[in-house]
Image 1: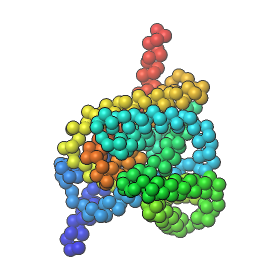
Image 2: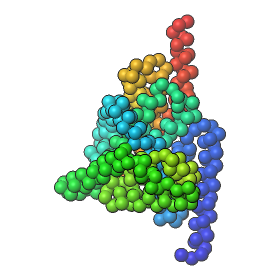
Image 3: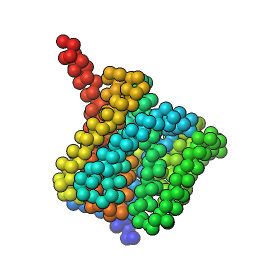
Image 4: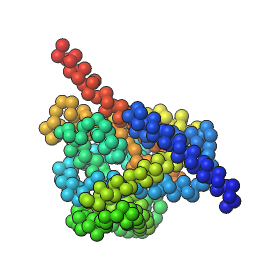
Length: 390
């Protein structure tokens, strides 16, 4: 490649990263998640945007893939094998209700839109899975981590994340359009691989962590990053999805290496995750948003009610009443990383022309409305209580 082309690529990429830094500052300033701003930046500077940029596509695509791998690895670090077992036992039926209610909502919406059954399946996954990353950040920002409803929220999120560990490989196989026997074998291999890694994580997580651990930051960084990329690549070869592979690696690693890895990889995660959301937005033409905006808004509103109903029911089932039930519900509203991963699979496969755009609008709305609703729930609830007693 000529030197002038390389220099121009550096300039564009540097300008894009500086722009992401400015957006992150704005998000922190107003206590909002940065993901919607990253998506909007992608829309603004992608094809059909205000000022289309011509990045080195292979590099940005690779950076986006690394971003989602690191994002889900760090998400997996939040769970230990013991916590997985406890949360699955205590929150199993909460997870089942969440799956049934919110997956069917998206699937039915896809049918109403006249989409294929496979597109409906993907939309069901998009509406089902909340954003563990955004919600964890929200719980910390709102000082809700020690609230009595928080364990219920966490158990539902754990169930969702593990459901995605099965959903994504199955979806990848379905999108390949393989014959019935070949596809069934691929799905079986994917499920066995996921189950094997979960078994190792729960039974031998501490032993694995002892082998990986080293006092040197350099050795730890290279070892963990190498394992993540190797497992992600192997998982992709077996149609399990690189993202799921990295998520399972995160689960398999426990303390003290988990905290060490979290500290070392967080900056890389933030950089490449921002590129991932930017890259998704770059692939969508903003002129295709208006036709799907009304439908996406309607589905987002329906999701708000269904997620609040899920949290409310789960909290009530645990004997929690009052404001805490509504906090449990609104905490589940935000959607983000997994929804975009699912939409990205559809865009790559060229499955349904409107699905990528529809999903981008849907996630944008819920990623913003989730934190906003969390902030206004308590004042509105207390105001309603005072009105009833006066």
